[in-house]
Amino acid sequence: MSTDGLKLARKVTKFVVLGSSFAFLATAAACGSSGSSTPSTTAPETNTPPAAAPDSVADDVVPCKNINSGFAGDEMCIEAPPAAAGFQFHYGPSDYSNAAEVAKYTLAPGQEVTDCVYFPTPNETEVYFDEYHSRMRPGSHHMLLYIQSAPLPETGPNDGPGDCNLAGQLQSTNLFGAQTATLDVKGLGSNAKENAGMAVRIPAKQQGIMQVHFINAGTKPLLREAWANVMYVDKSQVTQLGDPIFFIAGVTMSVAKGQTVVIHGTAPVPDAAGPEFRLVSATPHYHTHTSRFTVTATIGGQTQTILDNFPTMHVLPEPLLTDYDSVEKNPAPDVAARINGASSGILHMQPGDHIDWACTITNDDQPNPITFANAVYTGEMCNLFGMYAPTVGDMPWSEPNP
Picture (cartoon, rainbow, N blue to C red):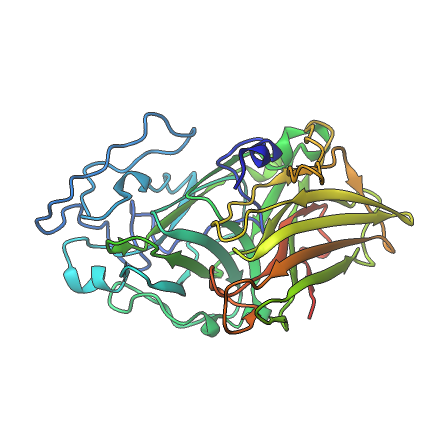
């Protein structure tokens, strides 16, 4: 990603609220997996020294101590918050000294894997949050977190991650996700006055699902591991609820070698949207054959570009979050110079208005057609995630497109 695009977000570490923004965990044990106890921090003898911890971390984030997995990225581990303050979701082995368990999360050079873990959320009653933090080891492409009321078979240290098709995602609410190794969000919506008191509701006892995508483009094995902490906010401080946008396009795409195709998606404002309905934030999701991602908003019959990204093809993308509020001043895009940018200001929208997005995808090197797939170098996606408020029916604003 070009440095010109970094100004789009208020923090380089921030990614996106993808939904009832929430991370889940089956246990409050530091760095623990679903149904597991605190992991052993000692790995078998290795020539790889433990990585140094970062010099500073965000508020409420505590690095793990004495971690020695034998793999790169030990410094990314973060402790779970106190049970009264929030909870953690963990994807990865619960015991680094258990070679069989570690093997289930090990990625060999040249491999690419997308899979899921399943676990119950620990909250006995509904809770609210407006802060979350996540970390992923090297090789990560994204994480996506979901909840649903319908239970699913749980995964634990003896099972390892499983097939994501089990999730039945039509029943699931996408919560939040990350496309960067480090994510820290404290206060939803840039703390603008119109977003004061905004939080996300987590119903009691949900089924938690975490999808994680890793690719190993190096020469040494990698350990697939990720942590996500959600921090509670007292219900008395909540005056409005946010929910995700989850816009998908191009699911039937087939871009043959030598072709350039523009994929389009559209998302009309829900009919039940009230007068304060607004797009709070947005971020694109694409892979390495996309050369442009454009988002427009049509409000009262007038269309304006609200986001324009110009990724470099064949380079792993790291799209960032853009806020639309009374505080953020986003840099304007420069189409001729291919500089990322976005509009500024509150984006109030009403029924009849709509969001549209377009992805320019070129197949210049793949012998087989590029299709919609979780494959960074051989597949593509044309998705838009983010947050809207206030919620309409306590559910995501979701639009699938062919």
